[in-house]
Image (cartoon, rainbow, N blue to C red; front, side, top):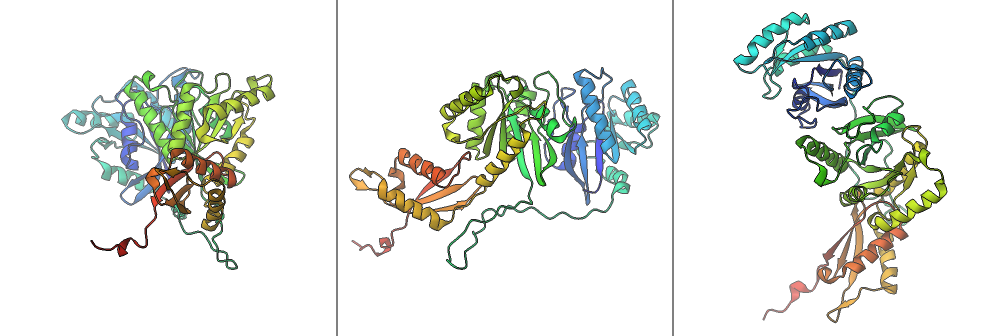
Length: 470
């Protein structure tokens, strides 16, 4: 991306619709309700062969700085300062309003380039609004329809002068399924070193008002995300780039996830859907719990969802500065985690304060460990030596008088670690023995805190094709 563009305008003029059009995906939440977008959301945009960073912003409103609307406006003003050029959107069907005139003057005072866009200009209803836009004194308006994609050629021409040269970045290929390297002396596979150049995708999830946005702001050292005492401020899943001890991290702030029965409005359903999408695309998920009310039913359901999606999990207990007897509280939390979340045995529990920043270094240390474990590939020879030892001490049970033979095991992929075992009768192997194998792999190869997968396949019978014809 060669330059940065901020989409500015009052609520409900189509900023998020234009954002989605330019990035080519329905990333930003769109609804008829004014004020859906609250945080500023960056994205990688393209018009033809013109590539740039686009920032979706909250609708500009004249409000008290301490109010939610006032804090949203502050986020938008930060986006204007960050951008090389602003797209100032008005609604062509409504025409120029006093609010548009007020914020046009604000943009003029900032002194940065502005491109005036009359959105929703399709049809005769929008023509008058396009002509009226000249009165704002921001130059010739571009007649556009973000919904239908009309006027993109004119927008391309308006943004082309801001293009500048930039070094190309290397593509990031997912090569974790490549064959493991081989030791030249023994001829056996060895574990591949972890690629430290790729950014780690980390989603911060939890119930509303757990302190997710506050934690990310403290990590970044700036008020990047909108925060406040009101529950449910975050609606979109916002990604921000961060570097910790020379490791690149991509943080995803997500909307709070309430119980399904309490999610009533269409907008909240969209927000929760966006959070679920962030979990699926993340590599490590940090589940934020309020230490004063930990392990609510919804917390357990979110943790179970993360495990089923195959993501690495860390549980962070926020508001740790409010705890008096910390040693006793930590022992209690460990007991609860072991009892309530057996599917993520060994998950790291990190006490922290999103407000003061205490515990963030410990959180990141655990995150790097879990990420390395999630990426591990166990050499096939080591797996089968372990399997032979297990079969010697605890072979599979006989079912219907016939012994089940486990012949071979391998790990074809990581992220999460996935194993395949070949046996004579996979459909008859009891679930209890499958769990026994997974627990043994987790303990022997030190794969705590990440979900494991075990697939059973039937080994081919080499004499089957020689069966006598009757």
